[in-house]
Length: 226
Image (tube, rainbow, N blue to C red; front, side, top):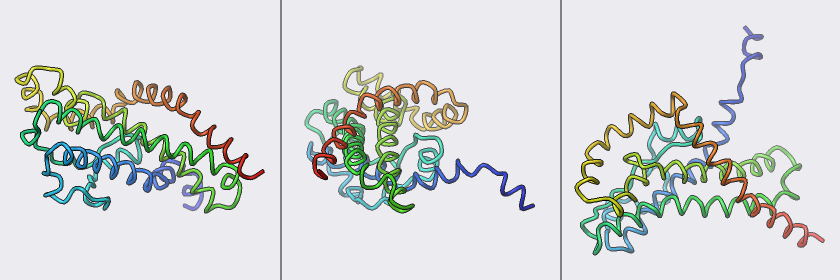
C-alpha cells in the first residue's frame, strides 16, 4: 500500500494547490473591475448587490474555481450588470465587459514585473520564499489565460457581451437567450480538450511577448542591489 502512494503522481494536486491564491486574485479583481466600471458608467446594480468587494467569497463559483485551478481557465460568479442604466447601453455593456480582461492583463504585467524584480532575492532562498516566487509567475500566467479565455464569444463570457456593441440588438438578445447552455458548452469544450489547444497556443504566444516586462524588473533589481 505504501508503494502505491509513493508511486502516485501528485504534481496535478500540488500544482492546483499552488494555484489557489493566484486564482482568487485573478477572479476577484476581474469581477470587481466589471462592477466598478459599470458603476462609473451609471449602473449601480453590482454595488447594490454587494459585488464591489475584494472578498473572494462574494465572487466564488465552485465549478469555475476548480476549472481555473486544474485546467488553467475558468470563471467566477458573474457580476450583475443592467445595461438599461447606461446612457448608451451597447457602449456601456461592451466597456464594462472588457474591463475584466483588461484588468487581468494589467495583473499579468504587474506580476511579471514583480517576478523579475524579485528574482535575485527569492529564487533560491528557502521553500517559503520559493513558493512566493513561483506564485508571482503563476498569477501572471493564469491572469493572462483568464483574460484570453474570457474573450471567447460564448455566453456568458465577456467576449459575448462585447459582441453587443457590434451586432444588431435582436441578434444579441437571441444569443443571450442561450446563455444557460453556454456554460454547459464551456465545460464540455474544457473536459474534451477542444478549447485547450487554441487557448494554450494563444496564451503561450502573448505571454512570451509580455515576458519582456519581467526582464525589465530583473534589470532594475540588479541596478538596485549594486
